[in-house]
Length: 107
Image (cartoon, rainbow, N blue to C red):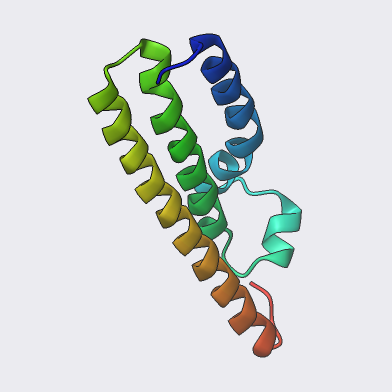
């Protein structure tokens, strides 16, 4: 069930490099200029990407550590729930952008 921990560690490293820079910038208040001009509220997008990264983290970490099948299953379920939270944050960001576009303004 755990597979090769090297592949899980490499996947976690790649997903961290891809998914985490933008949320860290936005959530610390240093968002890039393009996100301020294109998105109504970039915090929801940052939370969505963080939710997807947590999905990867909770699926990879128990496998890297060689945990038992019960722990791996519990963390996988928790990861899926965090991923669903990320999807909800994406929908919230899209709704905020649509409202801003209808109002004819950007944040």
